[in-house]
Length: 410
Image 1 (cartoon, rainbow, N blue to C red):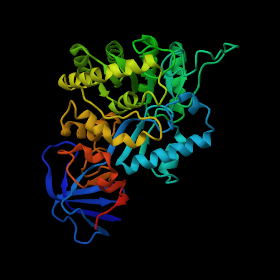
Image 2: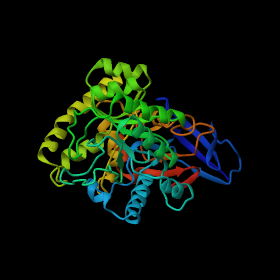
Image 3: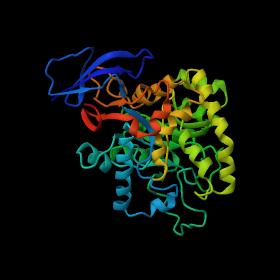
């Protein structure tokens, strides 16, 4: 099957120089050719972009499929089939917002990947972490304080994360997630905003435990992503071989940012989840002390992004949204990031930089021969107006792997 998209203004995922009057020839699930004018006289399908803006499909590098609510304990108690049903709806909505690829940051399993690959459900292509690894009492340990383990023989295993302690415990847990199909390993190295018992500034996992996770990922030719809010945890993670820092809201030293840049460590900021917690903390029943903490880090987070960008850290793009009512805010991440970055840099983060994080440079996040035909055509120019991504009506075409999921083109 040959499909030709004609008469497009193309952003290739890299260059600020747009190419006009471009045709993109698609063969099966890949882009075969990008050229000026018509590239083939008789494709099977010809689609006129009418001079609209064409770009790569978006990538969300911090996504959670199994998060119908911010109440993780409630999620933990959901029957598996019910939780999967929620995930199906979240994934379908994500694809219709133009995100053709996501990296799940804890919870999603290989069953979801298989269902997506075999077309049983509609959604973006997915790179999973399996269950994220937390030390006992760490950010991924969502047991309430009043839950007493009488036998003392078991840790926590929830919908998004599991506990592991000691280098050998972390090693075994990482091996188990990789065995079950994880594309990368997720660990928690600082406290967080909504976990019940750990302060945000709390260091988590020892050096040896972090090294164990990094080594096990390395054996599978992959990497570790680390939930890390503080400057100290980001620095330590960079020193010990972690590849991506998630959130990084309190990175405040230029030396830390330069270390990350020198070691090729990415930062994946997640403005959307903080914005939701600030605006909706009361209805989400966030405890008063946690709500005050979250409100206080908003400006710190923007300063961290600005600092890391200035010091040459490569910035990915993630949202970390939880709750079925908040996932539709996914496209709002672009405008939030534009508080401290140019529109071009934000678009690069959501395309080719995220593809680099996924080790899929040249295959995802770009408009180029050989890449997957994950393509958006927009009613407007996001280099001028990032609010376009807030409304899926602005997407005239959504194509994933050469298949038009949505099309308003002739």
